[in-house]
Length: 115
Length: 113
Image (cartoon, rainbow over all chains, first blue to last red):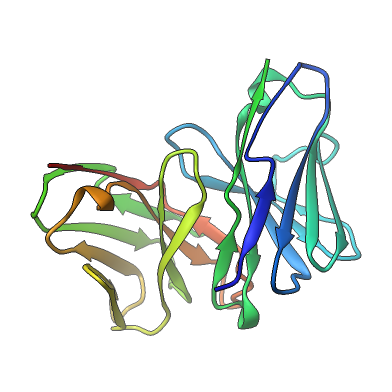
């Protein structure tokens, strides 16, 4: 099946710094990708839709300036957590729809810890 | 907005026992996905159901979508420790299935050897 690769799998950063998370579709093109956030023992919450060649669409309550999304190519979307704070610590996971959008393929997720 | 409610929230079963996890939607489901997740890891796709009354099986896991397309159940037969994890149901947003999903809160399954 299709593979979505997310990098890094774990990252620890200091408060105030920025962290970039990459999401790549390895064997297919994805004009759209989705970014989710998962709090401990909670479900996945959709943060934004990443659109190749245009601006991302953010869900209500998600700060656009804090979570910068760039979809530079048909196989790569990046999420940058800017000026990170400890409350940004979470598990972030991306997905890309498969052909015909009948399935969503998920990356391995990134565990972000802000200290 | 659509909401998915999973039950139970957590489950502990003895190895070899059968179990069922339910997922109920507040609106008609146009695509219902079941995923398994180990805490802090990515999601493993299990099955997708689209048609009312549809039933799919993979190894010892069977998922059904009811006729009215507002509830799905995931049944595991003869559970094993390898089945332990978090089970998530996800639904597509509205009738256009773009791969954009909303999720239930998850069911944590523990299987005791």
